[in-house]
Length: 159
Image (cartoon, rainbow, N blue to C red; front, side, top):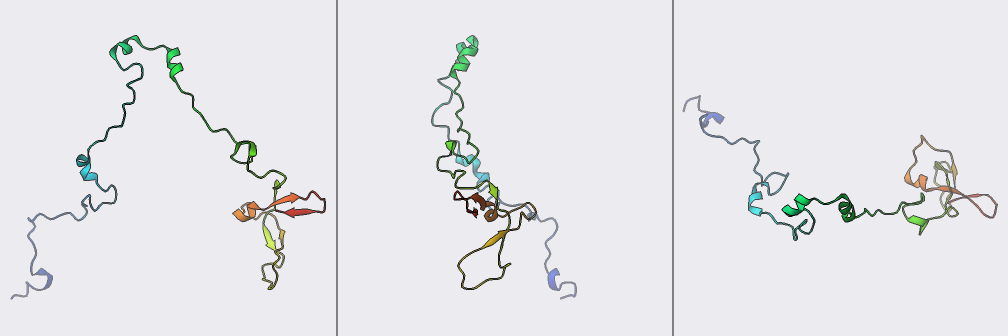
């Protein structure tokens, strides 16, 4: 053997051989749509019933005579919307929602433990004080805490 025919240069296909482009993907390997190349094989399924057969204007005579505006307006069905909420939540009338007596209007702000973050062992009570809102953004837990005025008049309680 000569020194020219060593290693990877033993066999090199000629340039005239057709080579597949590695960037071309088969549709079965593509993640876009699984059966895109088989759309003609799947066929078309028409709707179960025709849509406008019973409407006016489907025959040539009805198209020629044209329907009046009053008839068109009588055929229209009004859009039925869900009733708007009353501002407390999404239920009209506040059925099943907390009332103002159960939940205060004023938010408590950012809460910091009275022990400044150090854990006290043996205590099941949780005490915190309001240090105001931190940068205007509160976590979901902090936003849920509101100050409710106690009816007995002996101070505020946080709910």
